[in-house]
Length: 345
Image (tube, rainbow, N blue to C red; front, side, top):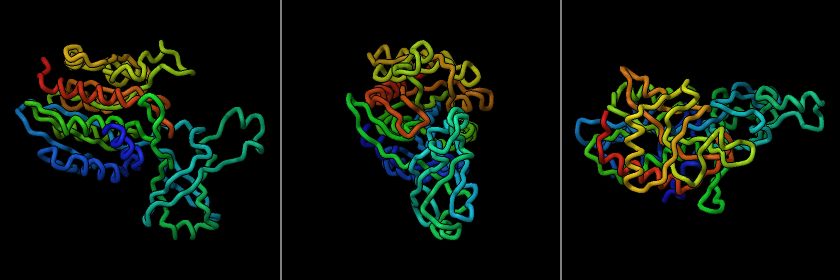
């Protein structure tokens, strides 16, 4: 079920602020499995499994990095802004989907051909401001006729594919992997606690949905489900990212060199003890890279004890992310057993 669900979610489209199609998939998956499901004013989807007064928040962001139309010139070429942390050369010559008022429209990201670049331009690399989207239109009016206008969201046109050894590739595993983890946990969990499964919006542009939902729910503790960078491939040393695909999910102790989350050690130990007691493979991480929804959650109100449970995923923030589905399965197993025992908070 993990591969099928991840494929469905990876192939869905939902940039920050336009997560609706992903939300629709999640609602269908959870129908009949939770006691309540609702959307808040920010756009977060909140699924509730009722229990006692102890409240646990599990958060997975729905949004993916993408683009948005900012200008259409007289010849029909479209300029855009990047939403989220893109490495600009990754975008060059990609095929894209523009989600306009008349449905999907396909285009390509163009730029100055390398044959016409001088040495200095080649060294500097292509910037977002140098690129544009070509939908085949001859003028601005034709673009507007296609249902595309200022503010139209844009995603990469790339589909999920199975590789060898239970490994798969696709776009938006950051964070559809975390969404799969949360959906499968909510479907199967039997816990004495009240579980809030929160599918958050706008994580990639500032952890926004996590901040507002955590404030409203005020849980006793929280776990964000997300992805993290493994150091198991060329171009990165294991000492700089000492986790690997296929060796289990990753519990965060610190991310972003402490500028983001410094996790609550009791919550970390809660997950570690559950993993050890049930022979579930798990890794721990002190990271120097990015951060997750847990950063916003743990700083809410008087502070909410939090950590992140992540899936090692190669090449994140690209259209060809790679992960091992066995890590997702192990992560779900871990959450299911941990949520039976109250952390000593």
